[in-house]
Length: 253
Image 1: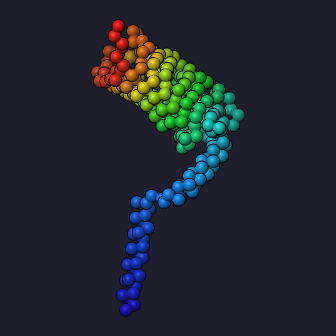
Image 2: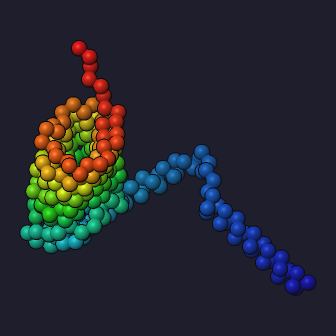
């Protein structure tokens, strides 16, 4: 009998554990009366995050913080200059509405720097030292609220990647990349894909480009009207598929 009771107890324990795991893996919807409590909890968490990111956080020999929606990046410890490390602010994407790099901050790669920061509206990189940047890929990918970007700090750089740099920036109207040497960029795939409000683009210097692909570079840029390709030279280009797919047809006279 004792053996049977032990086996029964183990069976109950196993069943109970299975039920707990099932609830954890397949959670049920909260009753309507609990939504307000969940919303309040989310609000408390948001406030806690805002308080946490108001302090300075290290990134390489730089530091960053987010105050009232503004991301600030500066050299750490009172240094005159500093080199940026990882992009720790990406853990708090919903809190970032603008970004400002203070003098002395150096970046060697900007790949994914603001990827999926869908609340970001303004990015000022005019004071960033990005002259040694090697990649711009996915830099603003998914920044659907971005309306203004100053990339003056990238002037003089010679990046090798720019794929999906502004993919899905559906609020962006104009971009100036003219200070960048684009000769070494191998792929422009999806660079402005789905930038549906984009009207004007000043491209990097592409007088002697080594690019092999412009696949979907301006796909679904239906309002694009100001784009100068007169000085573009891409002798190695092999894939132009849908480069201008979805572009708005000019009105007939």
